[in-house]
Image 1: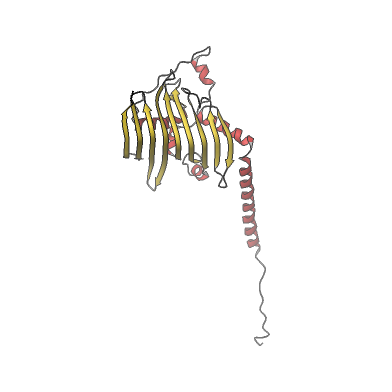
Image 2 (image 1 turned 60 degrees about the vertical axis):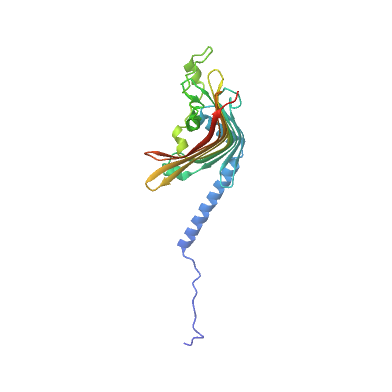
Length: 276
């Protein structure tokens, strides 16, 4: 047989296994796309905003109002106009946030690294601390952040005395009306936290200001190495007023915390007395 008459058979049939694999991948892609679009649209509804308010109330222990919630293309949540009861009243515990950006990580949950929350960015953050009935600063879910600022800034604030509730209801019955926060203080060591344009203030039981800070920038960055865990803290304050006699300006604090010890890298500021 000559080469010109030789026939060449071309196999064009794709094995059934290839069809199955391609169909499976296409189905998964389609389901992921539906889930993505569903979550993206659900985040914009009033029902999801109410759910977020209830979630924050359970974890922070105080009723919370959120003006608006949006989702970015990467499904980060952007909360605008977050405020609690007493968040704008002097001498009353509460907080307010102009904008909060929340980032989630399913891998954190699967790898047992705590909750699904992986990063939190707070812009225009203000918190007012006041004594609570248990002899701790409230809002208690944020007390750890406040204690770090007061300790590193050398505010020398004494632990608050327990507040006795005035009125017809006993103190324990009055406390039962408020939701107990479920946020644990060690959570702040496990997530990437960024606070900008922040303000903090501490008040006594008579609504007298003990200390206040403005221009707060606070960053917490967990560092995970193969055989070691570390946390980097960076804090700056534009100004702080401690009582009526002491103040500090242009304060900077930086620390690297490890399991066995902590290394203070920077602690500088212009401390002085308040002019009469």
